[in-house]
Amino acid sequence: MIGPALVLCALMAAAHAPAPPAVHRAAFRDRAAMVLIDAGNGAWAAFNPRTAGIDVMWRGDVDWRGKVFDFSQDSSRPRGTIVLDRTAPIASHDGMTLAPGESFTLPIPEDGASAWHSLLVAFDEQVRQPVEVRVVDRDGSERLRFESSTNVSSEREWQWNFKSVRGRALPATLVFTNRGTSPKPLRNIRIEGERVAWSDRAGTPLELTWRGYSPQADGVILRFDVRAADGTTAAIELRVAAAGRGMRIETSGIPAGSGWTSSLGADPRSVELGVEP
Image (cartoon, rainbow, N blue to C red):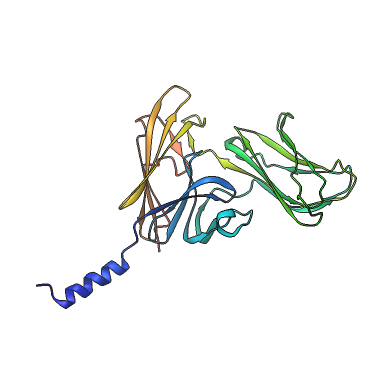
């Protein structure tokens, strides 16, 4: 017969045990279709399926934003204590008003510029007259040119603009030009990027193919295939699980002697994030 004391201890242990891990798909920090992992112990991770990298890890919760949550143009974002963050803007500017014919150039730092899987351009604008936007690479070639999407009905309401530029780039400048006849207000200008997460021993980005995820009782398995420039291929798995107040991320499938590294470190086979008190 089980005594009352044992029953009470079991109930107390169950009450303090971490919840099972859960996975959510959402736009997060302006990045589409991210994989958000709730480890069950208050720790979260944002996995990017395009780069197979952990972009953000934090303790706390998610500020759920967007059309399906609050009818806004915002995307969800972390709420709490940030442990790891690879989503900071490459360059940004608070804003200005461009006179007709005037241009504004935002220089892009060279450090790490070759390690971008894709670029993300974002800004807010007023006035129903488009502004011309260009991304120029270091060799002077024009990486991207487009006209902004203005507000449907209002001259004074702020309209959010966002453009994704796929493929590796060596960006040098972001240029805005007012080719209209009225002053053009801009604000919250930024160029961001999805950072390369996996490279070979020479630092060349590896080709990745996302294969999905599997929630389990004690963790979440993330799967993707990898192909190197020399033809080496492998099926990689990341296992993300609660550990203390943080997470343990274990990687399997890396070929012996390949020299492959990830954003988790030179040896990504077992890494702990935010585990300390």
